[in-house]
Amino acid sequence: MKSTDIPSQTIMKALASAPLDGAVGKQLVSNPFRAGLLEADDQGSNGSTSPCLTATLGGHQTVTTRGLWSPASANLLRSPCFFHQRFEGVVDFQKIFEEISETDYSHSRLMQTATGVREVSKQLQRRPLKRAVRTVMIVTKARDNSLVFLTRELTEWLLRTPRYGSDLGVTVYVDAKLQNSKRFDAASLLQKEPRFQNMLRYWTPDLCWSSPEKFDLVLTLGGDGTVLFTSWLFQRVVPPILSFSLGSLGFLANFEFDRYREHLDRAMGDAGMRVNLRMRFTCTVWHADTSAGAEKGAAEEGEQFEVLNELVIDRGPSAYVSNLELYGDDELLTIVQADGCIFSTPTGSTAYSLSAGGSLIHPSIPAILLTPICPHTLSFRPMVLSDTLALRIAVPMKSRSSAYCSFDGKGRIELKRGDYVTLEASQYPFPTVMTGTNEWVESVQRALRWNVRGAVQKGWDEGADGEREDGEAEWDIDIDTPVGTYTETGGAGTDSGIGQSEDGDQPESNLTSGGGAAGLKGKEAGIRRQMGLWQA
Image 1 (cartoon, rainbow, N blue to C red):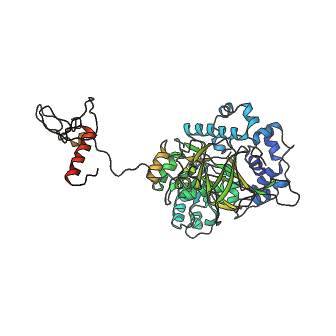
Image 2: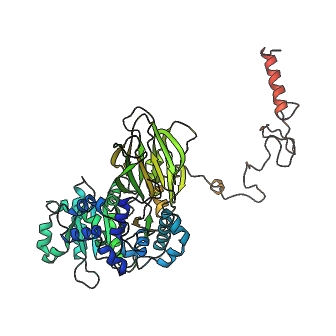
């Protein structure tokens, strides 16, 4: 497996995310993987489980991708950036492909991925998104019953508030676990207005994976963990995410729930919303093929995850230090000997990586932050790598122990000898609705107390009384007066030990006949003689 090879799961995600239009669309519809998605989606979304994910992924090894696609389809599979259909009216596709030359297409898939995500992100930040929001999904923080009541309040307001020429609101999807919740009380909501029967629906993780285009906007009620969980739900295309701060820290959640009506009226109205396209990682686990007759270095594709914060590889319960080989574009970069290593996105630079000594990186800067955890060498410092690199982190066959990897703190997997993880810039970024252009700096100051100082330096004007007679100096003691010199009136000063004055004159001390350090040394010798401490 080389870093330039495309994992089969990456190909299938691209097939499932491709638009169904034109000749390419017809070809994709005929694909058994895409057909399985559509068939599973038509079976309904109100159930607690869906056969979509297991049925399509379970038989993915039997899907033949080579030879089935035309050149147009092949280019589509290497699309630089798959994003929600709501952004299509805002993004200038021609500009994106101008940024990607033909040589880049043949040279590196990662190059076009990184370039495409950058250009799409810049365009979305400059232009507000003003398309109608007709379907809203609400993600509520787990194990917090108080937020269930707020979910009910928000749901009823969205259903009742007239929008877009209708006397009713928009379609709302809530967690399927709330369907029988007494606190949410969906039955009483439907009794108040029978027409809500077709407007109140329930989402499941499988629905988020198979049909992310169903949702025009996702609202999260919780903290940063709820935002990360939302990223975990959408492992392909992600709708715009608007997060209300109802958790502990709220670094990624910047909207106040007390003003939810004002925020949503603006985002769903004429003002629209500005979106920041946050970079994610595509991480694929590969397990060494230890079967008899297997080729040296052969590996089988394992799990794949879209990561918003970080990939962490550590030693786990082992008493030995981790021994990892780090490759960039199939070239050995270094051998990591540490408790572990953190590979962070710019979004994740304020999380685990920051605690381990990593730097803060603005989310608009595309980069991979490498931060070691307690390295065995003090010279192994955090490093910022290009987002066009294809990284491979391997456990060598001679390693004393295995390693463990986790993805945004979830899906912990053991890496045995010969196993490795590949990491590259994702084609599926994470769009978050922005409160303003200075959102990130404000979040750092508010949540992390960045550069917050208890004492503020006072200006010179605060020490002036504002009243003085004619000819009187503004300051009785002014720092511009040379210190440690004789004044014109013959007044004695003290030697400050600062050397020459600003005029270049050597200050004379009244302590000794000499000046500067030599005079002080002579005075010290005399004192020692008087005290009987002098030694020849």
